Amino acid sequence: MQRFVNSLIFFKSVFAVLAALIVGSGLIAMTGKNPIEAYATLFHGAFLDYWGIASTLVKTTPLLLAGLAVILPLRAGLFNIGAEGQIYIGALFATAVALYVPGIPGPLHILLCTLAGAVGGALWALIPALLKTYRNINEIIVTLLLNFVALHLVSFVVSGPMMEKGAPYPYSEEIPTGVFLPKILPSTDAHMGVLVGLALALIMFFVFRNSWVGFSLQTVGNNPRAALYAGMSVRRHIIISFLVAGALAGLAGTFEVLGHRYRLFHAFSQGYGYDGIVVAFLANLHPLYAVLSAVFIAGLRSGANIMQRAVGIETTVVEAIQGLVILFVAVSLAVRYRASAFAGAMRRRQALDNDLASEPES
Image (cartoon, rainbow, N blue to C red):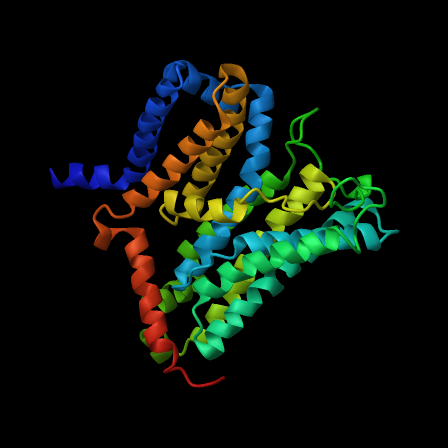
């Protein structure tokens, strides 16, 4: 019986999604549409139609990378709410290198842009890392506020110094075709960024499971004081985990520019950084499950657009269904709270706050 109950708890995220869809069907019925027809259109369009699959893969890339950027710092007891801002800064760095560093062969130029985007995201994440490390300032507040700073910074750049001449609204010039990411599905926008995201999820899984780095991150997250006694630097782990997380989010912004939009737009992200938090917790903070949850959230996004056009459901209803999924996933975190991944993350963060001051300056 206990095993059955544990199985139900393990699949609580699945039940949360099903509950959200059931409540969403009520909203669809209130509009006079058939919920079964609407959901069939949504899932067929997102996961069975060629163009829909391509759209799902395009949206999966930033969601997966943003989700990984949330999961990694949580291993060390840190909340990174700033993936959205790191996506913007990564895209800004990558676009700048694509536009203003000419004369480089295509593959090398793509690599350089990718590195620049990762560095941009990492540098943006370094700000909350240093404030947390040396002043113990709450990283949740800092990363959240930095999202708005990054958004307005990019908005300023694309409406001023980097704005294309004669453009009707803020966006940069188109990047050279030589830095476009290769496509994985012919005649679609699905690009190889999703394969990079999948590879990074696999690497993160093996690092967490089999390497000393994963063990030390887990030790710092679970018990910072024990990590100190073992000779591990808590401060170094905070900075490194934030830098890598920022680089992952920066790659999300980079691939949006190089693989999908081909120029830097004002407010281009569509909240990928915030949805990355949902991806992380829907996956129970597991890197491989994050692939599945990112595909699901991406499919919900792309399928919702198809459902709106095919069935004629109002945009507000579609957005409400997406919000219900997020709400029910959040509620599911309260199921056996003490045993949940979220509770573990909260305990690790509290321990980190309590013990950070005890580490000597290094």
